[in-house]
Image 1 (cartoon, rainbow, N blue to C red):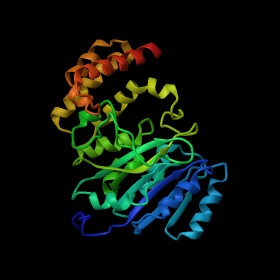
Image 2 (cartoon, rainbow, N blue to C red):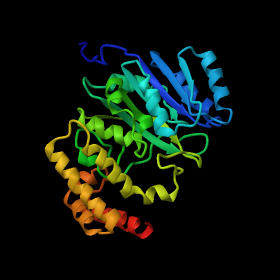
Image 3 (cartoon, rainbow, N blue to C red):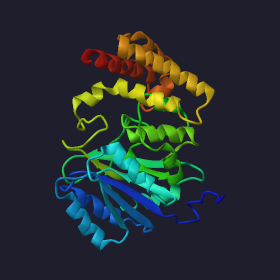
Image 4 (cartoon, rainbow, N blue to C red):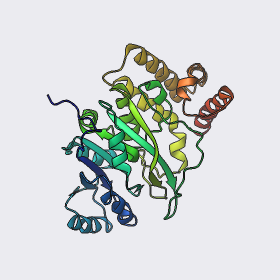
Length: 316
């Protein structure tokens, strides 16, 4: 069996998996930096989910101009996760990168991720920054959040910083996670599986901008920025933790900890009993709230735990 490549010694082919749906307004602006990546050994696999606007016609123009582009169009709308799943299943290159519709990439994004990828690491991701309008800011604001890195599955038990549009992953690893569960965020799910399969690697470089507008889609069928997704957060936490608990490679200790957390969440969601979830969050606050940067940590963690529970109970 061939050993995994060393990214520092080779230039493996990367497939950019882009899924589109009614994206005619921004698809040209997105595709130009992808086509102009400094890393040239690319395949650009685009799966259109039965768009009803002019997206498909624009994609055909780009494909005619760039032989690296491979087009597929679903006969009927399959949904976000299913479209990504079937596209990833057809990837034949060693590495793949996800491209969420409407985002803007730095032209060195793929090259820097490939060169930074460590031997046997299943997944690496970079920083991203949201923006509105036509032009992103050129420098990131000071962030109050840490990015996830490593193998601690409990750190992904409340919040995820691994954005799909920032991921470069080994194709053989991604195929082991297919199909992506339709009720989960595919990037959160992949991050958890990667943590259990050797670890997640983080590159502290801003290489992708996420455009936010009223048509951004989420797994829950809501629109980005709408209130309902936030109010469903604890339900989403429970669903992802259950998937992680059933994943191969999980240790006995991690499984027990997740099952304890899931039990607390079930009491919150189905019985409106808040105390077990609050106690668990404070007991394991160093892991669950790892992403919050504060000089005095526990008051912020206490406030955040109370806020999450109150928001859920008040609106569900």
